[in-house]
Length: 183
Image (cartoon, rainbow, N blue to C red; front, side, top):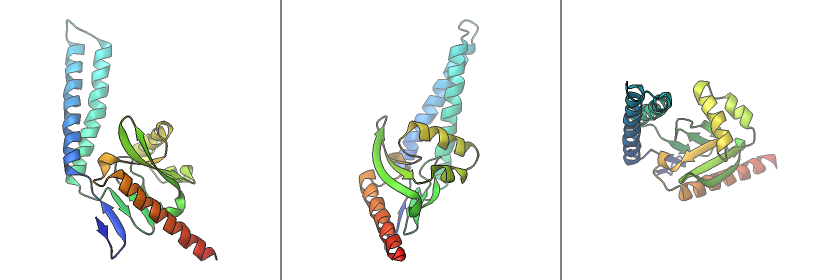
């Protein structure tokens, strides 16, 4: 949704996508539970299967809780305005990021899913603003993907190509304003 009065772009998560992800997580939690039961049964004792079940239940259980939270808490996934971006599109959403902090906005694909990646001038300063488990996840994530801040397609309704174009235009406008202030 574009609010022309405040020149903000506000994107909410797709309820349909969240429900599909919630259902998929539920299936994996159930599958993990089966692994645990089979791995601990008298006739099939298997430490490997039990551990796989525990990891599956823990990971997808956390995903399940996050998707339930996002369905209940209907705050925007992404707010884009003249100041910058507020990213809440995933658990590792970056929060508020000013245009001056963003070096590059790019589209990329990983494991069949599209992302918008934001490369920052000072990734360390950005990570310092984060806390706890989220900070740790962001550090791990930044080693596996192309940018420290990532907006997944399942986090927003708008197609990422169109969103990327809007974000790139806003970044250019911010750079032009910054140059004008220096002159």
